[in-house]
Length: 100
Image 1 (cartoon, rainbow, N blue to C red):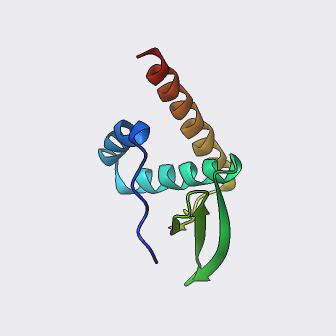
Image 2 (cartoon, rainbow, N blue to C red):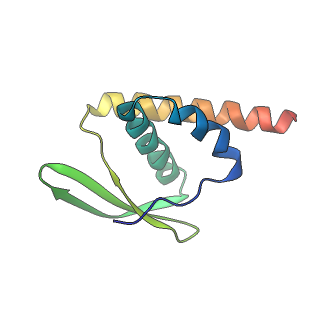
């Protein structure tokens, strides 16, 4: 598996906040962010592999970065809520960046 790419500068503050959260929250939020990238056509899932009942997804961004991410073992409903929360936070962050 490959390392995740460097975050764009506009996400650095969000990453610092996320670093203060428990590991399981970090995992959920990272996955939600990646799925938002897929939904927004900024990345695509190029492979899904199940290893020991864990689902790993290989993702390629439009910039050409390729990385693996573990799909958290939680309900689809919770994953959808996390995507919605992540989108809300990103939109708020982008609005605040535009005001500066």
